[in-house]
Amino acid sequence: MPSVSAGRPSAAAAAFSASLPSASPPRCAAAIPSMPAPVSSLLRRSPTIPIAVRWKPPLHWSGPMAPPLPISAAPSPSIAAARLADCRPVSEPDMHYPSHQQQSNGAFGEIIGIDFTKLQPGLAVEHRPGFLLDWREARSRALIAGDHAPVLVDPQAAAFAGDGIAAISETWLVSLLVAATTRAFGRVVANLAWENVAFPAPARDGDYVLARSEVLSCRESASRPGQGIVRVATSGATADGRVLCSYERTLLVYRDHHGPHAEAGYF
Image (cartoon, rainbow, N blue to C red):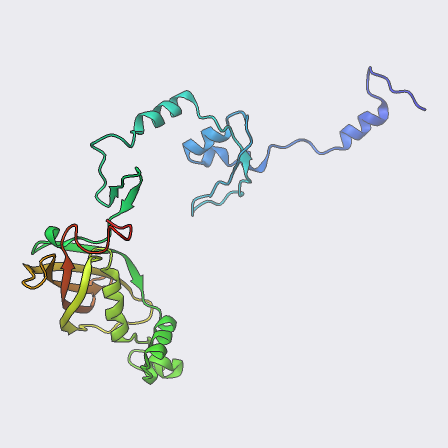
């Protein structure tokens, strides 16, 4: 059995070491100077507890993709102090969120819609997000609704109709506008009327529509003490201001602390 010396390496070992490629820094090392400062500072920390972190480069990034790297799970004292200063206990009496209400168990429940007592004439609401009109989706809706007009369900007819851009069903556009207003007017008991429905410009495949509503009038319901009647004007327009649809809608709306919302877990 050959002996192994603990002193100088043998000639064979030296030749083998020389044949190895020179060590190069990991691919992500060149990316660190171009990363955002918080990310680069985390990557430069000495690892203690390995945690996989996937860095997503910005859209303009042209360098190599950085693989998941182990970083320290324990933040630096300055970061920990900043986080602690930003935190407030749930029990603070001044904690209030307009979109949520605290429950008896300490958790916060979402508030769905504006109740009648908070609606006033002149109140304007811009509904987000908008919605993108897609002819294929509009076609499936038209087939379900039995609206078999060739320009709505036949791709060949749609390609030759109008300006060559597929048209969108007006009835579906109205339903999309109504759906866009649900988060603001989510306490509706019933729809009483749609009036003055208009389509100033044709809706086309690829249009991105933003909805806007304004409260026109509010009055108490004579026959329903816990409800009120609200009249709202809603319009849907593209980003360049082209109005595709507008209407006036009369709603029956719950007053505060009325209706099934609290029992169902809403506020």
